[in-house]
Structure formats: structure tokens, C-alpha cells
Length: 375
Ligand code: SAH
Image (cartoon, rainbow, N blue to C red):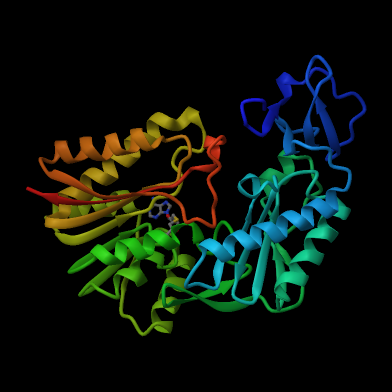
């Protein structure tokens, strides 16, 4: 924590006698010197999450102030969209709280004991209502996290209002939002700036692999002669088709395992001018890092093989455990293996409404690399 990090692991705690779950505590070093105020979890490996280097006595008031500050920061960095992440946990000094805005709907997620307290929930709801006057607020529950934090089970639900769907827009493209569908908290807002970047380079025939509800595909369709989106999830593709219709675009959606499809297409000699790879986090922990790296290698290898000379690869990894250096090395070695030259266009990360705190490397998770290939 002294090094600027904001977590203290359970193994580093000398004494936490009698501290109730989710309590606001003062953290002292082993000589009794005050280090800061933190939120305590009785069950997580991360026992303390630093809230402030100063003494905090009114947590709900601080919560409301931090939410207002998070909103002010978005006003600076978010443009051309009515869908963005309003609060990103540690990235906004609000550990355990995630809030997204989709036009007139708000979606929130609570991930720690402290944020789950009645007082905290009341403060969060009051501030969100005051700032956004939303039609409805939905809570998205991560059952696994609630279990780990030893919190009572809840189901994802509207917790205020009764409107559960809306239409939002980003970069001039419109999307359906359903509070009860989709993964994570709805759309992949962290890719918003990368969609715009990819659009700049897109042309010809495009393939969006792991397309989900069509985020990249719909952007590419603005410039490409044809776009195909691939995903293994039928509900995601159904939503993708609704999104295409909403924007008057024709896109081909294929329900398939991306690994199999890429292998078959590469063997069949199919060619594209632009390929996007945006797989789910293969490395959920360091333990399956090797398998994850092999997965990235295979995908990138096949995609590079299918790109025409001058073609553009947009390749992503959202696994925090795969470093940027490792990821770039994989893409480079895939290019070597298929005898392609590869030139970096852009080395990008998550959109700025998903803040990266420099002292906390865990907050930087998304890699999005655009590159062109030649033979
Ligand atoms: N590019 C998307 C986000 C992709 S999220 C966007 O910008 O919105 C990852 C997607 O990969 C999910 O939609 C999931 O359904 C899909 N997926 C996971 N494993 C897959 C596999 N083996 N083959 C195809 N799709 C897969």
C-alpha cells in the first residue's frame, strides 16, 4: 500500500480482531502509524481496499462525492456517445462498485461487502438518481463474486423503475440495450474508442471474429463492402441482427466455434481485407496462462494467413494476465510463422471511461492492436 497500491492481502494483516464484514477501518502500519482509511472484507483474499489516505468518517458522503467526481471526469473524456462506464471500481477510487449508463438506463454492479451495505446502497442510488434521473436502474449480479464475498444471493433485476430496454448510440451507430440480457454489463463499452480506430482502416471484405452483438461489425460496415460476424452465442447474434436492422445494414452472422471456423476458412484459402479478433479473456488466472497464449497464437496465425496483402488485423486481448509485451510477441511470432510482414498501426487500450491507474497495473487489462500485413 505504501508503494501506491490500494490493496492489502489477508496474509499481510497482523490483526483484524472484531472487525465486522464490510467495515470502514483505519489502517495502521506495524509501528502504529496511520496509513489510510480502507474497506474491509472478511472473506476476500484482498482484505483491505484503500479508500483514502485521510481519515474518513462518513463513508456514504464520500461515496456520493466520488460518484460526482467520476461523472465530472467522464464529461472530460467521453464524447459522441450516450453509453459509457460511469464508475469503474478502483479506477474511480470506488472499490467494488461498477456503474454503466445506457442512454436513459443505469446498470450497476456491487462486488464487495462494504458496497453492499444498506447505507452504501442508499447513497449510491440517491446520487445516481440526482445526477441522471434515469428511467430505471438495473442491478447486474455476479453470483460467483457474491459467493466469494459471502454476500446473500441476489438475482439480476431492475431495482428501480420498470423500463428494461432502450437504444443507445456510439460513434453514430445505434444499439439495442436489454438490461437482462448480454454478458458483463451489457455492451462492451471498453472497446468504444477502438471501434472508431478500427473504422479508419477498414475496407473491402471484413470478418469480425467473436462479434457478440456486433460492436466491431457494425462499425466496419460503414466502410467495408461486406462484413461477416462470427460468434458461438446465438442470443448474441440475434441481438447483433437486430442492431444491424436498426442501422439499415446487411451483415452476415455465423454461429460457430471461432477456432473451428478459422481453421476451416484458412484451409479453404478464404481471404479478407480486414479481420477483427476479440476473444473472451482466455487467461482468467495465471494458472491457465500457457493455454491462453496458445489460443491467442492460433487465432492470430489463422487470421494473418487469411489477410490479403495490405490487409488490416485488429487483434485484442482482455486478459489482464497476458501482458502487452507478451501479446505483441505472440502476434509477431504468428506473423513469422505464416511468412507475413506485419506493421503496427496502433497499440491501443481500453476507452478512457475505464480509467487506468498507473500505480495499479491490474486496472490496465485491454490490449487492442491494429496492424497491416504484407507478403
Ligand atoms: N467484440 C465484441 C465482444 C466480444 S466478447 C464487442 O465488441 O462487442 C467475446 C465473445 O466471444 C462473446 O460474445 C462470446 O459469446 C464469444 N465466444 C466465446 N468463445 C467462443 C468461441 N469458441 N467461438 C466463437 N465465439 C466465442
